Amino acid sequence: QVHLVESGGGLVQAGGSLTLSCTVSGRISVINVMGWNRQAPGKQRELVAAITGGGSTNYADSVKGRFTISRDNAKSTVSLQMSSLKAEDTAVYYCNVDFIVGGKRYDSWGQGTQVTVSS
Image (cartoon, rainbow, N blue to C red; front, side, top):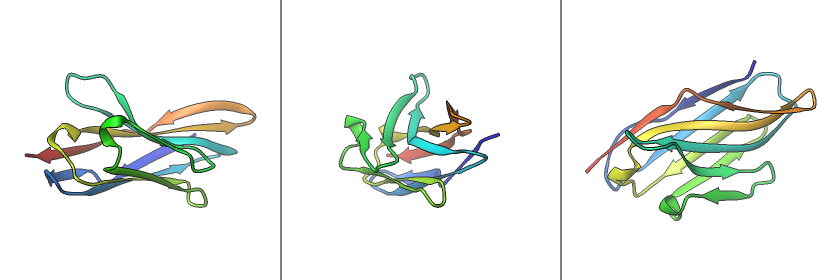
């Protein structure tokens, strides 16, 4: 089994910063893409940022210049540094990974961590 454990969510004032972390455990041959998605109340889940094994990154337009995604392949972790937070960043943030086990490709999601930005 593969487990994703997120941490770092919380309450922050607008303009503040938070860093989310996600640690992946389990029998995984290769972790391909690691990413963060979010879901605000009444809205669909959306991609926030993703990073490939080679370090290429992709960001939602709404977070470009404010959020930075990074990964530590040796520790199987992915982090999301969030700065200049806005009220509209309030959401449950989910870590997800695309990985290979036994030659087959899978994806897995964390349980989510709440980020609340007060205006």
